[in-house]
Image (tube, rainbow, N blue to C red):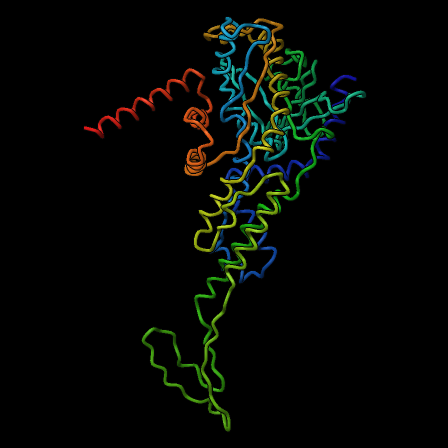
Length: 466
């Protein structure tokens, strides 16, 4: 079936997924810093208008989601080793591969793709030319969709839909428009699947996909569904923590003030002031009663609330296959903000990161195949591309990707403390410590560093004898 005939079905599928895209858009905005808007919206649903006006002045928008996603998305910190298969390390093709890695800023762009992968469970990695320069971008999973009509492999993407923005028609009507790709065709349509001829003409397209492949790679965190199910806990827990802390902030405000009350007295002339002297008069109708003045001091168990929040955070992390660090048990009311940050820093995400690697090995393998065999041959015909100091990788070459072992990411102080303990116990050599502290060093660099340290130590010992 041609793409033109299939468009209404594809766009109906996109319409059916609006709840999914709306959820992902909320996660995207919170990750980018718009947490406060959603926290206040939730609080407004739960309290009366008067209380909301007061709480809105004292919110606590601590963004756990951003810290968590950044902690999980570290597989490109050191970057994988890439090489042309079956060729020597010093080959011209591998030197050319290094130039393409640099031109595409591939580790930086795929690190962002890794964030979207952990934030929204999927992303689309798209190579493109910008005035002749090859570039790479990662799309959040709220502005594209995928579709499959493959009868054999329903997880194989046969069509890509990109949300491009609004188009203003001649009659002034504004409608969203979309780019829709298959391996062979490319069309621009509206939300109903109707092709927009003027945009096709502006794009200079005759409806044929010049690359012969969907121009990008879809990577998602599911082995059973083309579009993964949303993690409902992610958004709920992200909002729950700042809401609980905002409730506590609101309660603490009232804990700072005592409530003054009077029984059977005239309080019309009483006012609050540090040096006030009250001339208290009994209520004129008060016969046979004892006038009283007193105070009520509200109390809030702040420590109990903080412990509850920490327990929730720890339990949630464990359900996400993340081992909380020891520091999470040391968070108190006095060090709450810094304590939470330190606790997240100490969480061990190495197991989860190891599980992410196969998804990105497959994605990168497909990405390089797309670039080498489908996009570079087309780009060669672009006049602006030919002006770049960049040759294409010969057709048919394959790129092998090897990620380094994922280890627990520790802050500098914790890392040094652990190394010192190993040294004091005598279970490691100086060479082992140098290698552990400098995991990217080659064998020659490690040997040179050990030699330099020994020479410096001998010099200090000699000077001590003088």
